[in-house]
Length: 150
Image 1 (tube, helix red, strand yellow):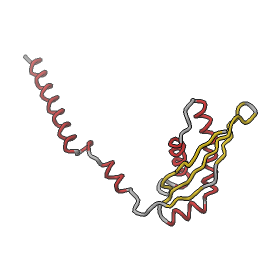
Image 2 (cartoon, helix red, strand yellow; image 1 turned 120 degrees about the horizontal axis):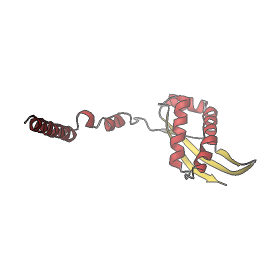
Image 3 (tube, helix red, strand yellow; image 1 turned 90 degrees about the vertical axis):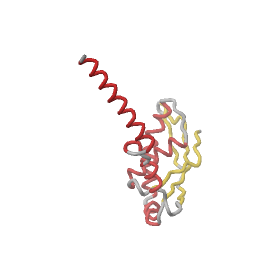
Image 4 (cartoon, helix red, strand yellow; image 1 turned 45 degrees about the horizontal axis):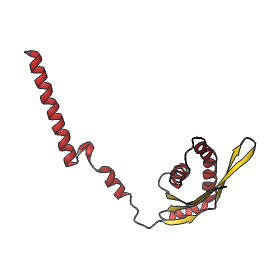
């Protein structure tokens, strides 16, 4: 008889837990709240972003002792706020150098893995590099205008 009671108690607890989780999901409270969407709405910029055009980046790809290909990346960066615009404009050579150093290592790794070089992948990688150089809230977005390989 004790085993039956334990099984019944376990089944009732399991149903209560499932019902509680369903109610939390339906009401969107607790761990199922839409706090991520609320945070994204809060971080939406009030000022329109300012686009700064950068020089083209030329990344050589080496095979053995010679240059096998050259990747040419044309890009722009978006910043929000005049103080961020001044800082980025002033330190643009430093940002360009950081992009070049990172892509010099990153692009051959992509090619070795036979992954296609897309502007979305490059923009995400460059955004991470810019966040390392300036901090997380200075550069709003990296826009890849064109990627060509020759």
